[in-house]
Image (cartoon, rainbow, N blue to C red; front, side, top):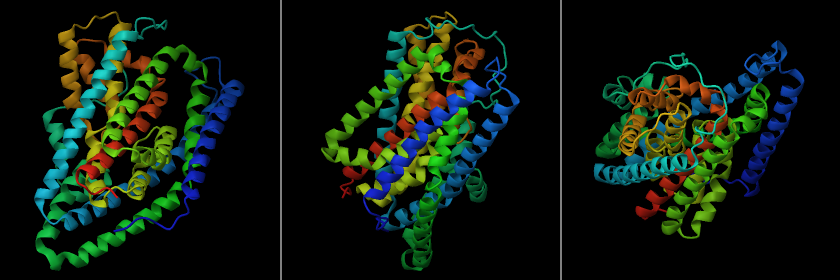
Length: 423
């Protein structure tokens, strides 16, 4: 399968430029809306502003729905075709093992770096904002990251249900069984494999159509956040936001250096190829929104299609580096805000808890916040502290979504290199 479509090299650059312009215009438009239409209280915007924000949110939601529409058939077709071409279960096992080893290593680095920075900077201790009352409802769904939930999110009871709910990990499990079965049957399965190969090309073409709407989605997403909260929210939480984004920058630098060790100067080419998916994830605050475009760009960069088809879906379930860092930041930030001192032993236990529980809620909406809430209750830290972060969660989510995309790009490129399959 070749997805090196005959695009001119300038087209992706123009699309990136349009998304960047939409990002800037969204900030300006959002602040103008906030200054002209916001009510006296940020928590209670005026009816007019509420209607405009609702309209903007609908535009973003339409784009995210269109992207989610692509993901299930794209993951299924690329993975099955990749498995069929690999030909044996040993190759699948080897690639999966290399990917998971990198994922857990990157997760540990993310958690430790977050722990180090939040301990050094202590953003919660210097936050001059009234604390929510202990016991106040956070409004998050009550989903506990248990072993049974983890198993439920891995093994599908129905592939139709898994696709309907966009449960990527369940689609991966079914696709691996299906693909290995195709490989073992051989010639008899070729019509199905060819059909799915055609489906992959069709879905990538659909991706191209959907991405034309990306600048509108980025504009509306940014404008609605800034319009509702105003630039002022960045000043109140400026220190926390600044330190978190510094942490993300350091994390990306570490991952990039690790990538450069194995990729050499090709790391620069990789960065050029993934800037559009990263910008898209940043603007929409959704890693999922970048998935179809990321798959396309990684194959254009030279990653092996079979490796990408396996590593990327696994990465979206197990390798959310930005989200991992956010979890340690948030837990310790809330503990500091309430004046709770966590011992070194507690912090180490917290890291281990986050390392495994974060893998147990893949596919759950607002998964990061749910894991944080469960961890807070485990260490007797008031869950109401999450209310401190809900107002700026979208702003923080933008950074961690882009970092998630970056981390998965490095993973796919490195595994391709280790498999000697990088063009």
